[in-house]
Image (tube, rainbow, N blue to C red; front, side, top):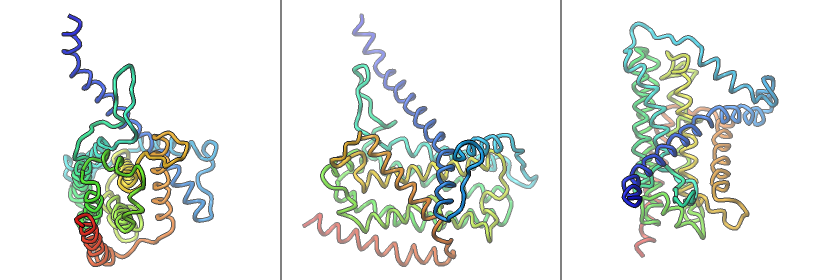
Length: 337
């Protein structure tokens, strides 16, 4: 009788564990956003030799809380000419896709709790990299719909810029990842980490790493590739007409995408949770690498000016894409030989 009960409950156990992991990871990602905003302000203050937030709480740690309260209670205004349904749907798409894309990101070896082996990710699929690219690509619909539904020419231009930028730089992103796939022979992110137990891929594929990172910065709409927002000429671009929490949801999606992209770069090129002889727990090794990459994202924003849009397209199509094709060709030749 007991054995039959265990067999009956086993699939529900996996469902419950999966649901708990999904809620924990989603909550952690949303909780990281205020901390990341604070870190960005503090680091940019250091980089630009000025003061960051330092008034609200010790070291300005209360600033993200006050910002969250302000956005939560700020009046949400919708212009009468906007498409109401799409206007509300757009920020939800941005946040939802950014969280779901993290579902297949492993951040450590499986652990055992009460005799149950639990993987440190929501879903362990053998096409994890393809899943991340597919879901991340869907996130662009939120930005395009935001620009389209606002009935504002500046918002529409921001949405169109974002779609063109995504097409241009996702090609480079995919081709740089294909070079790693050719070496690993798998689309599984876990297999890619296992293939770097001795040496990380950044030493084998340095050009692919630079191409992937550059395209990743453009994919997340971060400076100097933040042309869809472009305050100078588009007055904040696709989210010009948004306010309150709907405005904040776009930034939540952007910061979560930064974390996802940093995690993806860590898994593909930096060995994932492999510590390479350092006395670190696997989770801490993974988190440390992601944190360093996030700081590099912030460093780029505070250092480089926004480039002109035609140069953005030229850089993607005439420089990055040929380089990624060349790197893939050389990698394929070495793999075959």
